[in-house]
Length: 215
Image 1: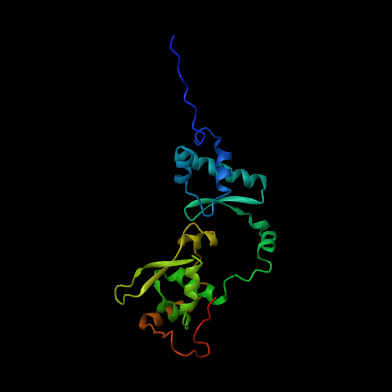
Image 2: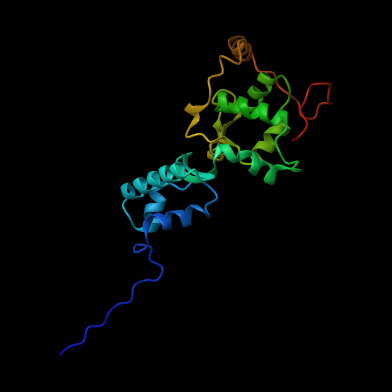
């Protein structure tokens, strides 16, 4: 009588784990939205099964009135504070914090978001001031990134990142609000920037209102 030797299960395998608790455990530690494909690979399950489970979890959290929600943002899933409880979290995290973006940085980021891919000189033309310092800050914070070069001039072009979408809570750029209601002179600005883009010398002496300070 022959004896059979059982092969012990791989302790690192996730195939036998309960799906929803496993997803919750993973999403608790991600630092950026996790894609369904990646989660399916880790848990060794079909992507369709992962997608269904994630949507069920999101619905359950909403039905239970949890203080957090599971949202699909920037191509992946991640936990977020539910909007109704944001004031409490803001007081905890942001009170006394001085690392928030300046008004100049927010304005520059908005120009990049709506005009991308766009060069620094084009952003400066729209804002009317040199934005080199502010653009460096946005690059360092991962909100914008290089996106090739302008064929005519060779100037580096910039665009927003997935991190920008994540921080704004957007699925994609098509969810940005329309500018027309807020900028009635948008057509005039567009015409001016198409006529010519002024150059800015970073070594030239500062003039009042001529250049933003670094954020």
